[in-house]
Image 1 (cartoon, rainbow, N blue to C red):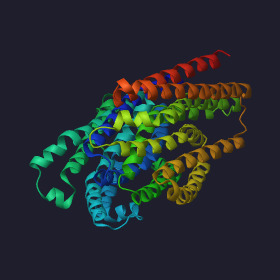
Image 2 (image 1 turned 30 degrees about the horizontal axis):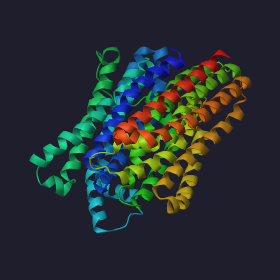
Image 3 (image 1 turned 135 degrees about the horizontal axis):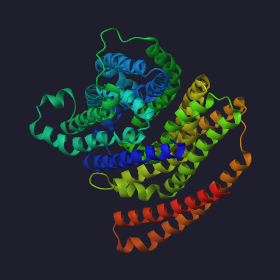
Image 4 (image 1 turned 90 degrees about the vertical axis):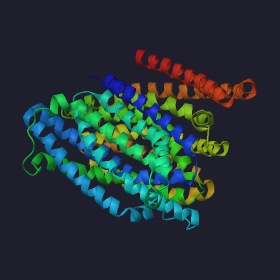
Length: 522
């Protein structure tokens, strides 16, 4: 399957997933607003999600896919045995992690809130966060098993099912906020408030667990007929040379990935020291940015890994450069229009998705500011995902690891200077600076590979991309000015923002599509 077709399938599934993700955030905004209660849930949810991104969907997913794919080509029977060994071994390991995480939840929350002031309201925030952390920790076990199943799905070319399975998780969030929360308020025992958190937010956490469980079941169902059914149970300790190889491959990936998680940890500490709702503003803004990131940056990166791994074995510098250049060009053609769109439409985007119910105009402006500065990270994020896949394919994980570790110092230093001046927007600025710097360093590291690039093609594409960026910005600026001057008189805020987004999205999409066709025809 071609890189473009595979990326398209993954992006289509991810689009549906991300759209339901935006819907879930809209529901959370309307039900809970931007305050300490939702902040507590987001901090608590961030702790198991850090492990999810670092282990399950990061190092474990990539390492398992690499080993399983090679075994499947040479020894299918051994590959199935390895699959079951991985299920048993990593499930047992992650259960131990969950138990330890639940026991040491107070200490973990303290690490996430080092800069938080000790007021009475903040003490209640700490209590709720600890209780929710304990409740949410089993979520990581569902994601670990699901990550192994997704690795098999990727090998089999079933990118769409892998991407769309997270719709179940988003539905769990929505059910938690709208249904489980109300059930707990009416029928839940009093000890829920005492030992976990306020009943409405606890219902949301229950929904997350239910959604994660259903997502795991969908992923396993996708491989049941071809890989699971008929396999004899494992009767010995699930350790083998293949499982050991996964662990060896995981180590540099964990260290490299941990830099990103440490950056999240640092950002969370700074956010909890700011005004009430800062964690929510940043989370909602980044959730909108996750729509193009998940569809395009992550999608191209995931699909590029097996393609690059295959072509690297040829040792043909021109062929390797061609495959990498195709991936980098594709991700640029996808993320630069998104950058242009969010740069110009941060406020109407937030107004349309979030401003209703308990989420007022003040929270909307704060979230829009964060989204504006986050948008500058899109290009760096897209390049970084593809380049990380390349370095993993050529087994230069050490360089990627050192680059990520360097970003920790940059992130902490930038936060220290920017957060005092720009508040929560400074944290969004820092994210963009760090991701862009990361991408530049990874690009510079390609010189060591001595690849034979098609330079005229590079220059042609970059010139067309820059032209599209300028023209789309001018067109969107005119549409925004027109909507503010005329349309808002007769339309509601939601109608105006929707019409503005539709017009600007059409302009950006059409313009870049025409320029892309021009680049393909040249």
